[in-house]
Image: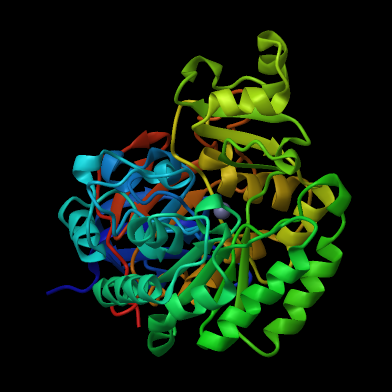
Length: 483
Ligand SMILES: [Zn+2]
């Protein structure tokens, strides 16, 4: 057998390897889904050759924060991610997961954001992971189990703390999920289904994380006036469980709090000296979630992304809808529920400060629902590479790539991913540093990125020059196979 005969060679590219090391010129050889050699590979022959002259060859991007739990099954091509160079998604965020669910339950918002059809529900985490293995998508997925989902399954009323019996039931479900291969647990105490949960409830439900050092990720209770308290609560949960915590989509929202990333980031940095903390961020000043009616969320401009009773209002400004209907903004929002919306509620300086913080990972928080989603669903990664790294000069390209590859793989324990080196899985993106940019915007939110030339997932060429190649080689990544 000739070990210089490989499946794929990417020739003449400039390698940015995902470790923050400076770029260098090299060829990259791939065989049987793995990187087998990087360097001057003139003596190698390959079934398929890509010329990457003048282009960057980087590890495939890992989206640290997604709601792609069921999208990988309903839209297995995952164009909105693959087109950006994303090869792995972390799902099960904000307390919301696709499993376990009961067939006979109503899903309150925001849990319904990852809903497919009641008939397709998974009653165990094992069944969910098995379905994704049986029908692979075009990206790898690592999934967490959601605390709000567990609450909705075991509790008859969600507006109170769980009692001892309910906590025990939820803890058993977390144990099942961990045994099946969940990489952690997420909470979303910001949202109604979990807002009444106490810190103690979360700690007791999450006990099965401890022995596995699994991830605790959270959409915190408050990212506004009480953001510092929320950080302290998050750190306490991590400390009491002895597990790494991820502060999801870190932000400070509402005008009264603009600038307060100057308080939150030093606290995060200080806490990192004593315990394992990481955070992610999306590169936009608008957030997106379920349609809410509270004043804090309706303070700035609000764009409707989807509405079950009024699908025709997707893409329109809530102010205009309210005026047309002759009602107040919150009344209009109530009529549009259930659905999702885009909220302009952050300050550009905070977004830049948080993104530029050394340890911040890039996560889209994209919501793959409706025709008018937040543009982060299609644009997050090229926006960091093109707009923030190249055009604004927030950090070097090597740092930008690290924030979406090596750093993320390290924080989530995805061994064998996130860096380009021999032996690692061949998750690779080839892009043009001069032209890469996000095309998706608030008016046209589903335009694919520009400048992404090739995306390879587990050795399979999946995206090339704007066209999906049909490959569905994504794997389910678990902590057991990633150690
Ligand atoms: Zn969230």
